[in-house]
Image (cartoon, rainbow, N blue to C red):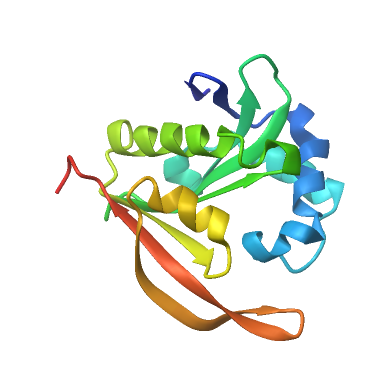
Amino acid sequence: MITLKGNTVYLRALEPEDLEFVYAIENDEAIWEVSNTQTPYSRFLIRQYLENVHQDIYEAKQLRLAICKNDSFEAVGLIDLFDFDPRNQRAGIGIVIKSVEYRSSGIGTESLGLLINYCFSQLQLHQLYANIGTENTPSINLFTNFGFQCIGVKKDWNRLQNHYADEGLYQLINPTNK
């Protein structure tokens, strides 16, 4: 089991007890825009996902971890590696903090720092990337504070209700692995 601990948060593997939390995030229409979700998920599908979450990142090509405050087992957010490509040593990265009260509190910053460090030191990745809507200023600030650079903008990339929105592609090259 992966456990990554910081000053105020730790990242842990998902557990069966996280069913309702993951269900709530996946079905929160307010964050579908950032998660690129279009339809609700059933508890049945999420239960199946949690039963298979034990797969190794090399097998599953993704890793989803719960973000928890150090004094609690209860998750406050999720952080993901996706499109894991060991041959080219890269992965996509995404983060969501469920409750508005925990956003802009440093939890996301510390969590992202822990996962970046894990990716570069343990997985030996060469680069990470993030897809961020150009209007999502909090996420842009979070990622650019870690050195992610916008390397391109995908015009009219995402359809949101009645309009199209641009999405930036942000990239971070491992400074110790060039």
